[in-house]
Structures are given as structure tokens and as C-alpha cells.
Length: 254
Image (cartoon, rainbow, N blue to C red; front, side, top):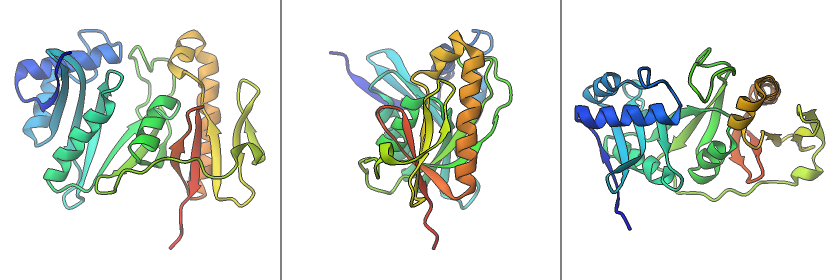
């Protein structure tokens, strides 16, 4: 069995390896990685951190974070990726680094149609989706996102809060349907009390985007409609079920 390790990276060669790793994850051309090594070097020099996870000598995950505005006690995770089973360790390494420098929260964005990432961020880490960003990056040309609109869900992670287990509240199946999905099934439901909205995403948006980009875009815009409407009414994304349903919860009013 090889030894797992996670460490911060500062040297040019190590940052070049991380840059190449991100290029492989996002299927970018070798000459145009999404995070060039020189950019990573500048972020580290400015006080940010690049963490790399190794399975023996094999680079198996990485993340990049920088600090937010002065006095905010917040860090922003620009990117994180890891092989299966290592995501938790990579995020916890970021958490330990951030807490050690006085941060209390961490924010980042992800594609809301990628259900496995939603479950990891919301149900496993306990982050909360606080902002829906329409076409956040504009057109993207990498091998994962190309041809789609780049909506993102921004999440906030309380680094000081104890880990919480996710339980889907209420009876989703009994709640009335409010929207229908491009596949003809129910897309969203809302409980009669108005406290929760549930919204479904495709099983694998990356495969769907490659096979049928027009259908993938229809899913994008359908989910966008549910989220922007709900967020405008004070809902936040608080969970994701194993079968691909978001839970949106009405934000408490003080």
C-alpha cells in the first residue's frame, strides 16, 4: 500500500505538475492549461496556497486558495480536484491552512448540474449554496465545459462549525410538482408550507453534454429557472440527495 500525503507546493517544478494535473482534469490543450504554472506561482507568492495530494509519488489531487478582502476572515478556493476518495482530505487540508491564518469561512463555486460535486459540497462538507451565478465565466473552451453556459453555484463553508449529517427534510414525493424537466419527468417540487424546494439534476451532465449538447443546455436553463426563482425568494441550497435532488431551504428571517 502506498502512503498518502498532502502538502503545500512552492517550487516551480511542483507548481508545473499541479498546472498539468488541472489541465488533464479539465481536458485542456497542454499548451493552454486552465491554471498556468506562473499564475499559481504568483498566487503563492501573494500569500495563497497550493495544496497537492500524493499517492506515493503520484499526484492525485490539488487545490488553490487565496484570502478574501481585508478583515473578512474568509478564503476563496479557486479550484480543487482529486481522484475518488481524496476530495475530503484535500478540502480539510485547505481548512486547516485557512484556520491557522485566522479565516473563519471559505467560499467557492461549482457547476450546479454536477450532482456528485453538489453532494460532496453540501451534504458531506456542510457548505451552503448562497448565490446562483448565471453564465459566470462566459464561454469556456475546455474539454469538460465547452458548448455550455457556465452557470455556477457559490457556496459558503463555515470552517468552525462541527460536521453535520445531511437528512432530506420533509416528504419530497408528496410535495406538488412546480416544474418539469427536459426528459419529461418532474424537475422541481415545493412543499405546501413554502419552507423547501427540491430540484433534480441529470445523472451525468458531463456525459450528456458530450452526447447531446442541445439537451444539456435545455437542462441548464430549466434548472437555472428553478434556482433563480427560489433564491430570489430567500431560499438557499442546503443539501443534495444520492438520487440527484437538491434541497433548497427558506432562509430564516431574524
